[in-house]
Length: 430
Ligand SMILES: [Fe+2]
Image 1 (cartoon, rainbow, N blue to C red):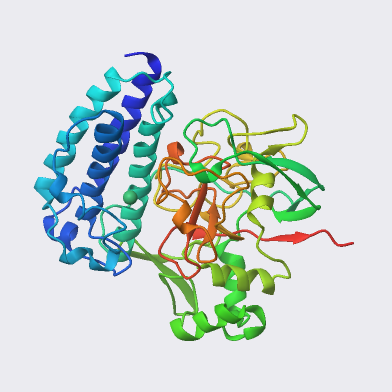
Image 2: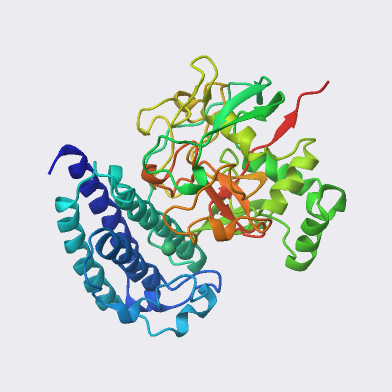
């Protein structure tokens, strides 16, 4: 195998180790549905193997289906999450055997395939990038399921750098055009393409994500009880849900506590807020006299290098993420304190744009001009419209393989179980 194939093999092994670590638990935890929003963990586990079988073995490798009779069970479109517990799913031991069988053949396909050939699915190992990113995304989903389950034990307490206070509240992004999206990153998804010029007026964007201290001030100021700060749909959500703080927060003895992977602890005031929905982010921004950034504003502040006149893969440049630049890859099971990554700053000086928390943007999930479906319309196209808001930047639970400045995530504006926060922006006063 050449170096690139070795690297793909290493990434395949790493993501599988991760999936197996998250599902190393008693069967009951794996087969139970912990929330109607989520699949049983054992569904995710077999689903990543089935996806790998469909794309690498059948599509790219031309191999006869191993278990065609289970395809429908693991087709996310045929079975909504809430219905998954009633499916005749593979049990934990059988699921592990199945995905291992698939994986053995995947490595054979990798060995034989021509990554420089004309087939778009093969070129630059796209199909491997597809399954590696897909599995990491399911691993992050599994973490959200575990957090909802209240099951202790998966907390990982790695060391993160300390926060720091120095620095302005906002950074300035002068008017001008930039290149949004990509035509060159080989593992970028169809929804990140093509690269296109976007012209933006000048704006300010928060240097850091909104922190727990600032968010708690919004709560203490009666933010959840004042319709002035909320959009009409947001206020309706607020009334129906009865929410009065981020998910997993409770106030006791005059202080805020949160539950994180089955443990209750004081809310660390210097961390970015997480587990807020789009409506809460939007309301906070209005209370703060600001607004959420558009997706284009977010991406320009994160990835554009105005001096070089080109887009960076990460805020700091092209080098792979390292522990001093971003909190990615589940180093610890929480966001890093605010200001922890001066070395990860973007060209405009914005920090912690990659890692820590996904960031809600003001934008709906829409195709870029010139969008073309690849390799299938259920990856992106069926989600375009006015149902989903775009999230950017990746969380502490996202893997570097599935994070870059152009990466787009999307979810319903009511979702809070994901590892999501936000930062604010404002237009330049004229
Ligand atoms: Fe999936």
